[in-house]
Length: 272
Image 1 (tube, helix red, strand yellow):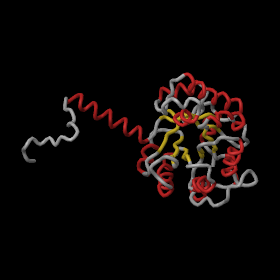
Image 2 (cartoon, one colour; image 1 turned 60 degrees about the vertical axis):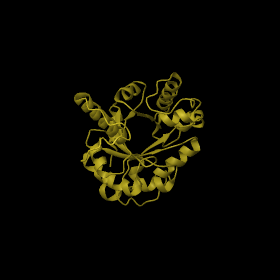
Image 3 (tube, helix red, strand yellow; image 1 turned 120 degrees about the vertical axis):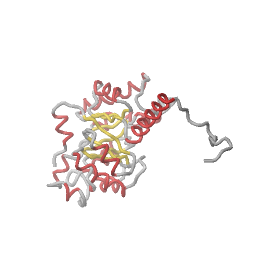
Image 4 (spheres, one colour; image 1 turned 180 degrees about the vertical axis):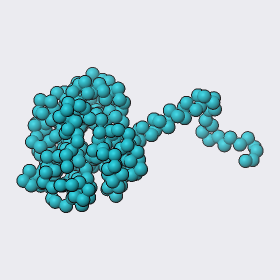
């Protein structure tokens, strides 16, 4: 089974990536139907566990979107079980050295290229031809989130079998010398932009892909111009909150009806 993201990159196009943090297959199905090239389930920080992950992959299948996941940690059990559920790419947090990157890659590949054990419970049923050929199709993205990771960036990027580096700007801000800054997406500070651009440059030199988690389409497009190959444009929780807030604000603007003050019952001695 061919990973469609590889074909997109061969054609010289960037990948539009979505993010799921709500453990619900209907939410996953809705997001998958919106035109993303790939969507990742956030097992690390999302409000979900493995019992939600598998039905979310099932719900996304009909759309044809490439299903991926961010695992909680550099843990072979979590990585292999997520792959067996059908993930076509794994994002692993807190990779700080080439040794950790090599360990991560080994968990995604069957022997002789790695140490993944065979037992693709769902993937082997719904993905025709699933087997050793998947060694060349599963994507491995290491997250660089600390000063140690930045110091070892070139060595990490040179890891054989690593497909890319995924940048989470919030943790990159907290974990580096720029940690005096508050965490968040779409960094505007010169020192953070320099770090983000450096990662893209190193990835390009190493022949791997650079991916960036963004909050807005505008910033994501800017990141593409910096050399990023995949950009995440927000996710289910932020999109839901943003759309709801905009709808509520517009209604109040049009009607002039302000919300009650906190603690007010609105019942001035009468009955309902």
